[in-house]
Image (cartoon, rainbow over all chains, first blue to last red; front, top):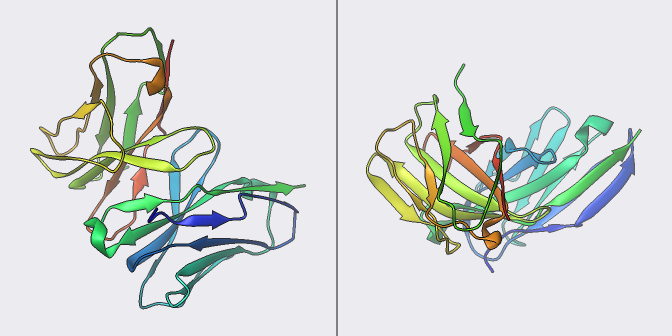
Length: 112
Length: 112
């Protein structure tokens, strides 16, 4: 499969702790994106990182990309109960005709 | 405010019925997509369109069809629904190639 694979599948932490989720992929990409999904809803875009970038920040979110290892990580700092959701990475493979393919997601639970 | 609208939000129907899931956007985006997602699972691209009168099948084989007669409208039709079609259907748009997706709230379809 060329899809991104998230790790871990599920993560449970306490409020205030940091949450780290990882995504691995198999072929060259144009960009990698992270999305968030609350239960039963559509996805919301968080960050897009291009293949020539190594790190991006947005508020409490930090995304890194290592193209040599074909992996990315999403770090949420000082987590809140409202961060509870599923987080997906999506990759835009160069051979895909610019169609995003999604991984299976990481279910994050932040306990108050 | 620019947005993406999916209707209905929930749909329960019997086997063999013809249904159309609606997706409309006021974003002015050329690119529109339909994804299918089972609970707790990854998203699968089933159809996409890069503009009016342009439609393509996605990565997951689907018995549904789509049309793109107007930029803002991208309906998905199932001619004869079956229990295996039970899933969440998510519509998304993008302003350009390699850019982020904007998702609707989804339609949860249950076929009895």
